Image (cartoon, rainbow, N blue to C red):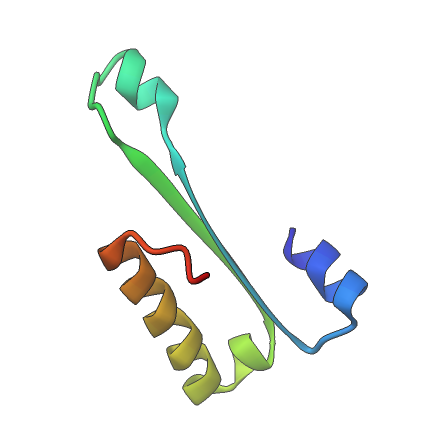
Length: 71
């Protein structure tokens, strides 16, 4: 997804954070309802510049704490 956004938008700063329900942990084995998996991919300035990376990740943390979508 990060690669697709970077190539499609021709930008040198792409960050993607995905959060998804972990159905295997919810329905089998561990049986932990609501378990989630989070993964991220950063590219260009978002990865390489500490202030830009911090700004991006702090926004993502805020959205996950408030349940917001950023829209």
